[in-house]
Amino acid sequence: MQKKSSGVSRRGFITGSAIALAMTGVPTVVAKSKTSLLSEPRGKRVVVVGGGYGGVTAAKYIKKENPEAEVVLIEKNQLFVSCPLSNHYLVGLIDYGQLCFPYNKLYTKYGVKVINDLVVDIDLTKRKVFTSRGYIDYNYLVLSTGIEYDTENYPFYKEALWHFPAAFSPGSEHLYLRRLIEEFEGENVVITVPKMPYRCPPAPYERAAMLLSYIKENGLKAHMYFIDANEHPPVLSDGFMKAYEDFYRGTATYITGATVKDIDVGKKKVITDKGEFVFDFGSLIPPMRAPRFLKEVGLLGKGDRWVSVDPMTYETEFKNVFVIGDSCETYLPKSGYAANSEAKVVAKIIGGRIKGKEYRGELIQHGICYAMVNLKSAIVMEVEYKYNVETREIQKILREDNTWKVSTAKRYYEWARGLWRDMFL
Image (cartoon, rainbow, N blue to C red):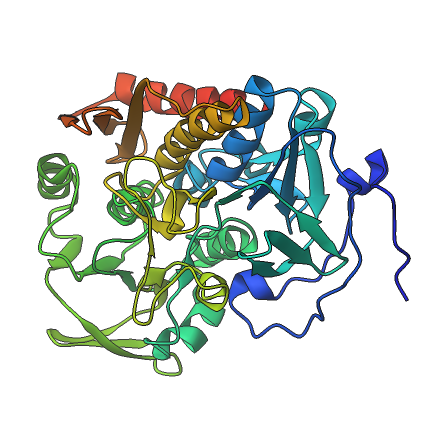
């Protein structure tokens, strides 16, 4: 029997349960506890669910701008692992440890309470978040729960992902995919790309380019079949297409507008409406959606893939409940940088409400996507939305640099380091 606590100790903020079910979409077997995890706060309480780019940034900036508020971050994993730059890890350009960060500085430097636990339910009416160990009341709720692979509507991906992980969720998928790449000695490589939207639009195209460059540098005699559900790269199309033509002519076949119908893992075969493709190594990227968990709590309608929010404020139909990052439907691409930007918008809105007034300034959403076209050079795009909350006017600015440069690749590293500093330091 769990003992009701009057609060959670410092140790309790950096340790916790390791049960992992609901946020991965597996049917929940964890019973809801009636135990309150925290004592009543002296000020307002903000609960942030999900410790990725959006969640960490939201927790830090809300607490930084409102020291009197109690900010609680709930995350099932004990370490943050970055998806941006993970393609660099897959081809051996960086170590895995460079992608990993502990959550403890959020507590020691900013006073954010970090609870490693699983969220099993949310009562949006009573404003309670239930974890495997108890519940937490909130005044404001920010959900930054990322994506889930859609194996419900595309069941053939389920077994395929056991053998050839997509590596679009941070963690062990990348470790295993890197091992498969290092051990690869075959002839045929397949990469599948789902129809937009999915997490990080340029990532599959960058992965194809970096893998082809890796194959070339290591003297492997392999051919890539790049099976894309889209008609062309959705961003940085000119840069990618020129790179494929200039660097990889004869070593890859780009199949566009192709729908994957089935994957025979035993025969290592991808069946599409444009032919069948046998492979020795595959990077099989399935369609994605917001976690089913959000449907169970009432934030996703029937047939919806993404949570509907006000696209400029990220507030849902439930007042003071915000969904940011990859789980919501918005103007920005689904990416770590966009989630970071969205979190700062939400921090301003919540900060204003904590102080008893609505935020009236300009809200700026910003997205930057770098992408490597080989192991040394990169291209970059930038999009910005400026929103006037009083006039509700939106101004969009889009810039692309499709000329690949070594200097852009160096800026890519600095961009990632700057993002991590912004979140954790």
